Length: 420
Image 1 (tube, rainbow, N blue to C red):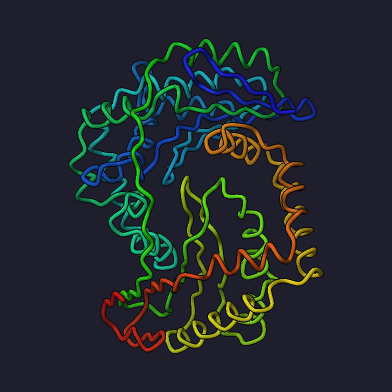
Image 2: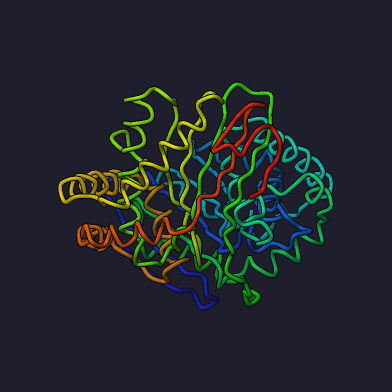
């Protein structure tokens, strides 16, 4: 059973005792990400995440890495549009060490100038790596172009130009503004003693002070762009997108079932028709990305450039067909069973568990037990699906493609950038 506790400084702790395991997953989630950045500092959240690993007042970057390696632990971090996470997985006997290192990385990082300059070059290489991978880049680009002019459209990595301008003073000021106790969640799951975990967290995180600056963010305006970026590659990589729903929207369960049926499984409509029946693409799938106040539903496919328009037309036809007929009871129940099985299988992974627990706190301010999510999914009716399908696809599709000259989609992309 998940337990919740709020420290006097505002940090929220959620933990789950699983005594049948030997491992423990633990992490710190900060409710600040790339959408919270000023445009001239784009990429600062991700840069800060990197700098947490680059030395503290008492340990070098190498020493931090060696301490985790010596106990066979795994340590990781990542930045999203709306939050940043530092997390680890260790044996139960090494929990105190893992917590002390994470706390030291967050509160005692020195952000040494020479380390900053080196790490900027590392991230520049990371940016170039993604730019060289069109299959990855197109997913970032569809968000950037669909939400152009809004903070959600800012690339998480930032740009080389914005990154190189960031100073040590900027990092410290940014931390003070958003990396505050009231904006933090600590999640732990595995072979633990809850009382000892609470004492550890109190001793290592309880002294932090400060409150997050008030958020003043406008709703993102979706633009159904049509954009083509010509590149000397073999395949066309295409993303089609429409506005989705926020994390807390009650329609999310129906949307999850629509996504599963349309393109999120090997038995989905898109996979079966585009790949299995017609052999038009190797990769074709759909996914939904929810945010605090909105979301983006995306369909991706990669194919030969002379097939790009055929797949596009087929996808539009399948969307129209789905909107007309909806999902019948038999197919809906099949999708529910597949998703519920996936829920429980993921729940057996402690890293997935703590991620879910932390996001529940960040977005809902409470814990949604898995049984509650399963019940909500089970309650979705064909009428609910039909209604959400109409809501989801009422907007024209944004079409964003990377590919060689000659790629043609709906007659509008012939080798030059086109906004429509």
